[in-house]
Amino acid sequence: MSKSSFKIYKVLYPLSWIYAGITSVRNKLFDWGKLQSKSFNIPIICIGNLSVGGTGKTPHAEYIVQLLYKEFAIAVLSRGYKRKTKGYVLSNDESTVKEIGDEPYQIKSKFPTIRVAVDENRCHGIEQLLLLNSPKIDVILLDDAYQHRYVNAGLNILLTDYHRLFCDDKVIPAGRLRESSSGKQRAQIVIVTKCPINLQPEECNIITQKLNLFPHQQLYFSAFQYGDLQVAFPKSSNINAKEIANLGNWDVLLVTGIASPKPLIDMLSKQVKHLETLSFSDHHNFNLEDMEDITRAFNKLKSNNRIIITTEKDATRLCVHPNLSEELKPYIYIQPIEVKILQNQQDIFNQQIISYVRKNSRNSSFFKSKDA
Image 1 (spheres, one colour):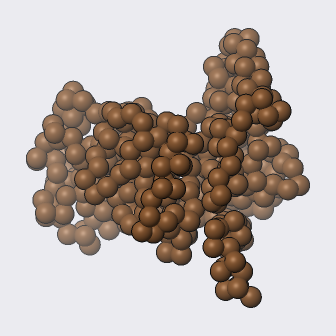
Image 2 (image 1 turned 45 degrees about the horizontal axis):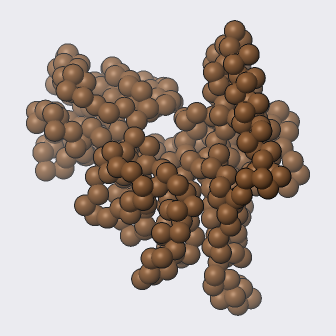
């Protein structure tokens, strides 16, 4: 495995020790029952991480939704980071990014038949979702709720970035961990994300030893796969889909507002004729000046074969922006990101998720007879 290149700020260790101590006391209060976790009579899957962003939670949440939604009535509950609303909001076909946040909006757009809700108070959000009928919800997926211990999730999935394993990191502000790496003990499943697609078994063994998980914890490795580019504005575009299939003939402006754009940059740099990038902070709210910068950067591309590529999450904010130039719309394409479970473990992972939901479903007796 290549040597980690991320920074640890040793001068900030004292502040990290204080922060780690505070989070440790909080976790102990939950462990001892001084702070109460609430259980619900429904399968609840929590997906999250120990670090601050950038591990691929949304693509992995979408993988689980894709796995379950045809058989179960699934709901996704998020806090709706950077939304302009407060409290519980159940999305509908008219919901906007400002109302529910970019990641819930993305999930709702891709899976319009499922329930997607946001609430800072996850317990309250779950209670509201359980009041819904036609159909009643079978399973709830909590997005980015690993530290929200007021909910006792039945299945905790912990993600860690291949390039920044939690065992190599430190608590903020010296590193990027929200809590000590000992928090790994709450997870039933740990996934090392953003791995090379050709990850070798020897490297898996090294990482397994470094993570030092408990016997009851299942470890998986996943990689990102990039799907075919999608036209952002089909009615405006006049570029033939076959033309865009071979990016080797195109100059590309990549616009991102995600935590870790490097894998996408690395992938495109190998495929396109010429690549320029504009990288903003995660969940960045584009303003007028940003839109003008994007227009200028695009117009600097010399080739007649030129396009703009952005991510699915960024498209939820960029493509609805009131200051997006009409002249740019025909040239904007969206890069889908999909998850692949590596080491021939995809069927094992899928079965672990499905089995948990079936076993803990309110209709578990039906599923037992169905499997018999």
